[in-house]
Image (cartoon, rainbow, N blue to C red; front, top):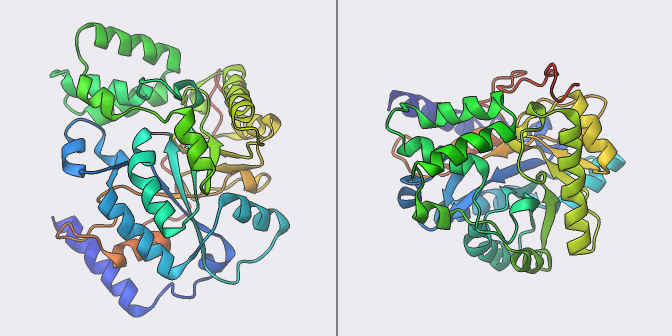
Amino acid sequence: MFRALVKTGIACAYTWSGAGRHSARASAMPFIAGYHRVVPNFVESARRTIPSMLISAATFEKHLDWLARRFDILSLDEIGRRLENGTRFNRPVAAITFDDGYADVYHNAFPILKRKGIPSATFVVTKLIGTSQPQIYDRLYMCLVRNRTVRDPFAAMTSMLTRLPQSDIEKQVEAFEADGLYDPAAIREMAPLSWEMIAEMQNNGVEIGSHTRSHVLLTSEDIESAKHELLESKKALEERLKRPIRHFAYPDGRWNRAVLEAVQAAGYRYGYTICPLRDSKLPLLTIPRKMFWERACADALGRFSGAVMNCHVHGVFDRQGICDHDHRPVRGLAAA
């Protein structure tokens, strides 16, 4: 509670002072907001799945309204063209993105965006499109929550995802599931988009991008596996959607030099991370985003706070020059 009070106090002081209102950051680079799942009821869904992946439709709409009053919300294609041409943004510009390709984005976010006429982008995991299979990390988290010997399911999940290649994680998850550590209701809730949903979204202002074939953390894989993930996802999307796929989002924002070069070689023009760190040689493949969830912009009383969101937009809470992810090469894996 004390931390929430301090955060709220800082946000209010920063906003009331007018700091950042005309900041260089607002005009030099677009602000790109990222989300994962949009659900009808945050509290209900958070009982079964990863809370930090969720935002309620009501809170999501508040985020959109706050951004729309302060930014021109553009498509990623338009933002990419301006960045590529070196065009300076005369007005603050923003974009809305979603990672992973959950069906609840179609059901709960897409109608709001369509009603408001706001463009957006969805980065999809192609192997799962049209199936009922949840993401690998959702399956892992669900099993760890139901395993009473695990004290901190989220920490255990994060540790496994960052240390092990996906093939090893898949074996562990299958072993957990064989022991009955799964929740059928949660599985249904975490269903991915279908091709029909994606086509409808694409025809109504939603840019479709790649998020790899199977949501591997590219820095945890050998480079040949990483290349396969990048190429196969792009190929599947282009064959099905009949248009070039230019945009790519790194799973969990993880990249290093070998991964960046593989993304470039695969033919992607723009890459999106989840940290402020950029590569000076490939800046268009390391475009930063800010990821949000239900309580990211809440005040000390748990209500949506424009002041807190203002601080997130201007990086007030960021640790300058510091990223929680290690972008150095990993011996024997992506840097091999």
